[in-house]
Image 1: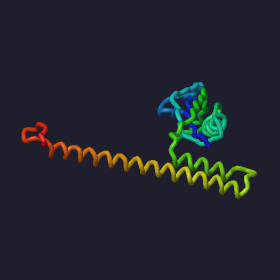
Image 2: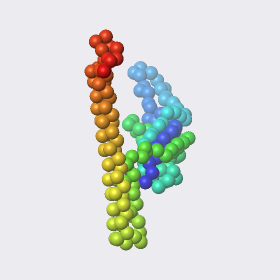
Image 3: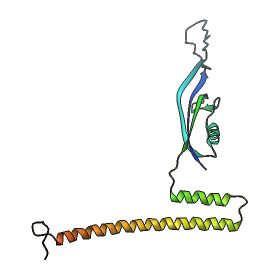
Image 4: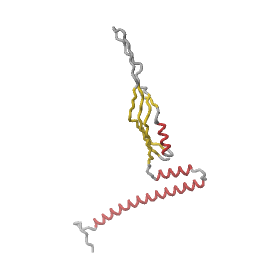
Length: 177
């Protein structure tokens, strides 16, 4: 299943209104009246950001997962008990390109074979055999390349030794009769 990188940006807003604020009547005063009334005020804060990677069938499915995390109108409560509403929610969903390796490719093909409906056991076994053969051949090629690299190094060392043995004392080419 493809992997997607999801970024969610959002703001939060709330209404605050002082509630239950009373000012004590000082001693020695008369006709004390506290008629304080504080209006509510809208507060909007910026900077919400959440990101994650998710395996999903497609971009739409990945975005549906993001909607489960944060969505426009979602209410959240902070540590001091204020309720905030998520607004201006924006989603960015990008497919993560996983570099293909032999191991990853084999795992994908094995999963495909295992999940393929209508395929009989003999055909599954044939695909498995072919996949194993390809993997073994690729390993042999890799082993041969390593051996060629090793032999190239041996030949280069031996060529240097031959040059040293066939050179004159001053480094010039020795004359042989």
